[in-house]
Image 1 (tube, rainbow, N blue to C red):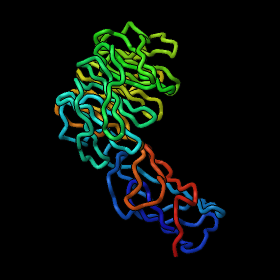
Image 2: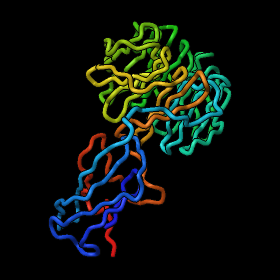
Image 3: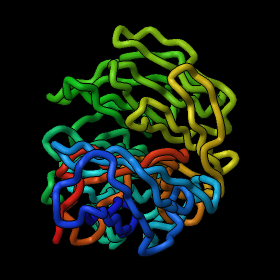
Image 4: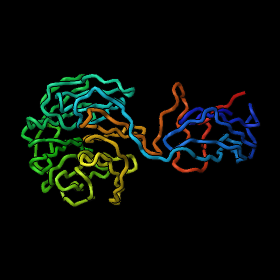
Length: 346
């Protein structure tokens, strides 16, 4: 049997090579490459394990050595201008609001940067609707622009007050934070603007959780507020330093960009705050890709950083049609649970 992990190529040779295994054969496993991955260096060891005779599924012990997971950022994109908001489209392209030159850049998964749209006025935040249209908060002229996938720009909403954060709810309503007005407005798909909630302190970022609660970063008092769908406001977490961007991961943890100390904090659903990553330069935007990598807009040095958290699902090897097989943050068992995750050979 030959199997490939999602990290790199590894060879697992079964002593019943070319035949369907009987239970509990010996599994001799040798790494073809020894590479450092986000969780450390994965090393397989020879072992005897049970193999399901009907499916061919098997598992083997593994150990993880090498560097400790540290969520160290790397530079993903340059050639942008004082980036603030970030947003991914359905194709995995990253869009960047450039407050320095009033444009929006498109960054491919390979890091290629091009200008997607221009003519904005202090673009401060980005959000995609379900139809793939991009919305841009213009803090300079108190409007929100709509940009079609073809790059055509129109005015979607007016009458806002220094909008600097955007987020869509599940019903397709757009929410915009007013930094100067200490409020959050709701904008219907028709562009009608009403006040949704007040009482914030320099609201600088918005994000919805899976239950429909809205989270607001208060730059003025270094807190994050939680707002129910009914508009009731409570303090969710404290202890930040100039919170400037928010995003949730797939597990429901909230990430907060701290512009004041150049870090990103992680907040559990219970509100426990820890430092997730450091080494940024005035982080002003956050976004996750589909494989769990975090992207950070560095306003100070006009770059976008990429952070691969421990346990993030990496892409399959180039040219591989095999699905992800295993990832773990702890030593333990490398499992190949279904026959679609391995292939037989003679």
